[in-house]
Length: 342
Image 1: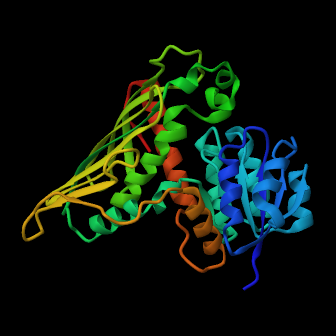
Image 2 (image 1 turned 90 degrees about the vertical axis):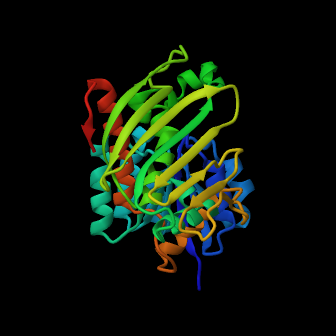
Image 3 (image 1 turned 90 degrees about the horizontal axis):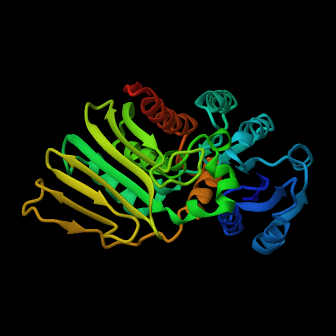
């Protein structure tokens, strides 16, 4: 099978760019990569990470799409700049993987999801944790009924406050809601919001809670959010999302059901533990399988292979849109003091 050509559409502030380039470099189905960056800032790293796979480095996004006719595009730019680039890639008949959130309003992403569906192209936000081995194991366990009917869940993802104290960060797009769409909940919390819906195969349909700045830094986004959510299966959950630590991450997802529970702690704890009364001798069990060290490379490989109909798409445009809508509903709830439908 001949490999495909991939266009990487980026610019200053393109998040996780090196991880994306490294993933493309080792994806066998990718024969050539065209990197388009008007700033030129990524040329050195593109050459280093892609080697012979780098077909061309361009300064113009439209020219890269027109001249090289890629079948797949990877978009990583400031959130506010992403929608027109995603549209251009879709209109050029590319499948698209985009750095989240790729918009600052849900209304900007919704037509892109419709366009992708109309053109039979895959569109996914880079919500990479779905493909972690522990997540796949937990999902199969829940789907098989090991913990029974789902009752409720709690999740938190907490990162470092240290980054927020940098003057450089204060000037970055991550610290300005007009450019980023939101703060911690949009940048990191959205990963856990997507994960809990993926694990439970249930959508969040309503949200209530609070969001704001607790650390005192001069930000135009929240550094903290505490939310309560309702799922379409009738269960409830709580979400804590914030920059609180001096370094590193604390993360946790726990799901309770009528016959037990499942717990994931991807950063530093036991990766996966569970308990099921459906076992003949119920006891807490620990996952002993392989643990992924990288989440982006498996996602890139899966999305590229899906574009070739070699495996299912790991994340759809509709699922990406619902994760975004959930975050925006949380923001509306915090601003209005009233629960909001997603």
